[in-house]
Amino acid sequence: MLWTGILVGLAIGAVIGVPAMYWEVKRQTRRARAAERRARDSQRLAEIGAMTGGLAHEIKNPLSTIGLNAQLLAEGLRDAAVDPKDRDRLLRRIDVLRREVERLRDTLGDFLRYAGALKLEPRRVNLNSVVEELVDFYVPQAEHHGIRMRCELSPDPLWVEVDVGHFKQAVLNLLINATQAMEGGSSEAGPAAPGRPKELILRTTSAKGDAGPVVELHVIDTGPGIPPDHIERIFTPYFTTKSGGSGLGLPTARRIIEGHHGQLDVVSEPQRGTDFIVRLPRAS
Image 1 (cartoon, rainbow, N blue to C red):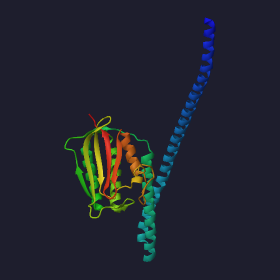
Image 2: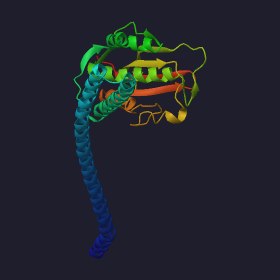
Image 3: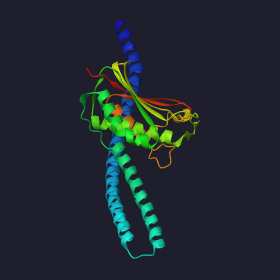
Image 4: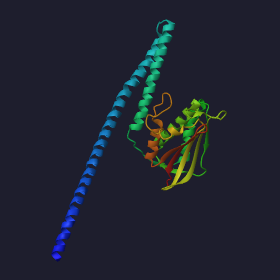
């Protein structure tokens, strides 16, 4: 009887266990194949990225040559014995050509910054000092657009580990975006509140993050704000509502900030303005 019970138990175990093992092996096989597909797709995307970057460089170099030759052509045309009306007409066409070359060159530059490898060399710096340098650099451009810049810096040093060059590029993209928003005076969110001064405010502070203490940099504008249905899309590459915009400034800024283990968030209210918030881990 004992052996009969054991044999029956083994038989039942085999009946239950073999199908279970079969489905487990099948599940593991599916996972392995899916991982292989992801690896192949990742490699293919990396190859496409490298090819695209190379192609962009190949286009950018001739563009520089075209722009230089257009400038030389314009200079030669001004000294040529040509009817003044014809000269003016040709100079206008050359000027259009030069502007388009410059626009394409800027677009390619934005693409290369976004798609290129992010090689960071972080060092310990006081965020307040970096912000002051950026403000000194950007004030002339802000004033050119009738915008008043204002700094509200923490009284205490805010130490962070950043690659200063890349970090400045990210914040500069935010400043340019804010300037364009206020320069237009209106957007899909509607016109900015009448009588409001055009201000660009940079504020630094410390805060508590989920993983420990952080420092925050707020880039605040008094523009028309961002429509609620655009908030989630503004960091998508090539999404833009601005005429002539590349749609890569904000995605590049977020990529750089996240490369520093930080976050870039946005809070916006129609007709009141927008606050881009950069959060970085606080250095000890």
